[in-house]
Image (tube, rainbow, N blue to C red; front, top):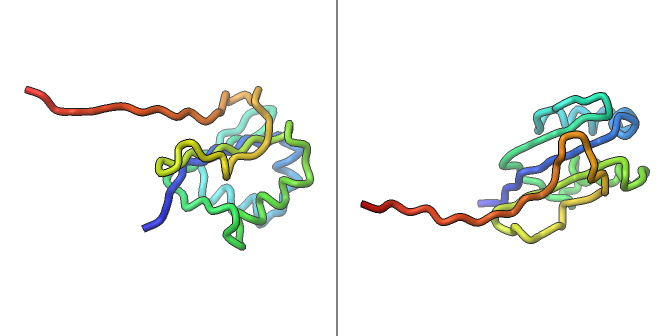
Length: 112
């Protein structure tokens, strides 16, 4: 069994275009894309999102290092570790999708 996360990735157009073709293809293969005139938002649910995987995810984070934090936002929401910000990166907080990490707890029960 492994930890799975929901991931939201907001990239300004210049960032997305500058990523390697391999990284763009990876993002498009694991996430649903939502385009806007300012950029693109990728959303994936239940992903094995390990930032030090030695593969595509780590390469993506390495490529983001070339950009100012205000040009992108990566938000990782993990149900097993809701307080962790380990996979989150960037500061494009006023992104057009309003993406942010939301943590909530609820109690469900059946009653007669």
